[in-house]
Length: 289
Image 1 (cartoon, rainbow, N blue to C red):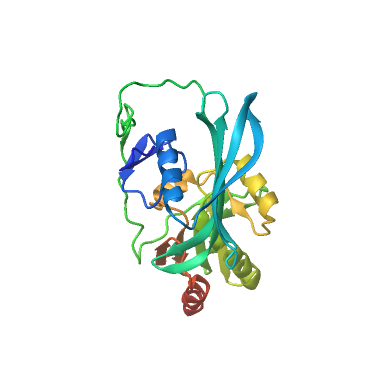
Image 2: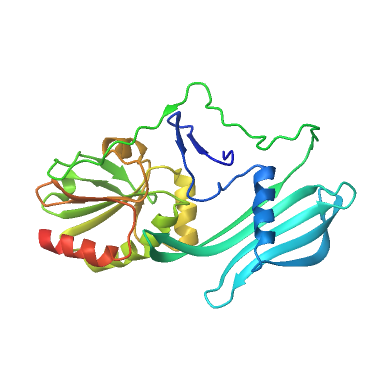
């Protein structure tokens, strides 16, 4: 939830919440916030307004207005599709389409595409003007999410046994005298998607050697992981049901990485993906072989 100032994230499986200053507008926003975003776009001269062909939303005839900005060189765009009821002049639906650069600390890591459809109904018009009609309330039983640091270098890596989405079993004990790179990941994580092709390349490079790369999904169901593997044509195994292990390894964000040496000790950790990930991690792996 976003109230115009603060962003509230709820994690129902753990009954915890995070309240923070948003880096961007929330993926799911109330109508007044979406309207404010469109208004901001209209003020900027780079946005163009086009009347599209009329449409129908929930059997109601609607005007279809497109407010958009396109970067034809980088193939980036920012689009708002407004569907306005012809009888009431109310916004009954809105589609946002964005393709932008994904960056971290000023480094461009890739592009991210996003399309969200909003449909509004059961309007209730208030005679009172409220600057911000949305207030954030913490649900009963939810506690603040306390971020715990990742396990320290030199710590003996906790033991585990995992099963991949296709039924293969693997244990840390079986990887004795091997260098192990562990990744904690989940579907829908933009930085995890950036890491995916790099890890696939590293899987192929180190296949059959004294280096093993283990990707652990700690959020999604087996069915969701199966679909992800099929959609993205992932060749390397993804291990599932990793939530308990993520807690043991004190993972609070994806992707998170642990590099474990041949003695079974943690040598290096990282939270997030970065531009020269492959070269830096490869150098660390080679130093441990």
